[in-house]
Length: 125
Image 1 (tube, one colour):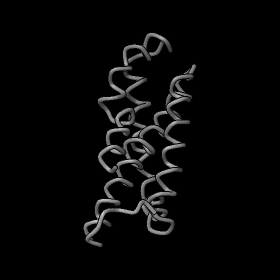
Image 2 (cartoon, one colour):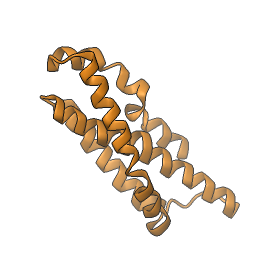
Image 3 (spheres, helix red, strand yellow):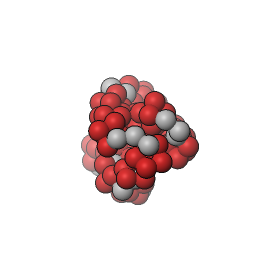
């Protein structure tokens, strides 16, 4: 299950986003530097969310936090598909990087660590 969650985080990873860069530049009529800056801001800002997600996993468990992260990730991917300007692109990058690249990987990795410590398969809750 953890491997599937990590695989589903693909759209939030750099390799998943990089294939869209030329399309974003053309559709939004912005420079490559502007898209790169939006991605930088999104990555750094998204990383700021991870300590709170980690605390939420500790407090509420893997399953509820994964559900929240997955719904938020889907919402930000939808926002990314609908952006019309650079501010929206930056906001979408923040969410996609925080929830996809950070959150889903954090939850899956934590579930494996909990299973190893307990000596059993994760219960996801």
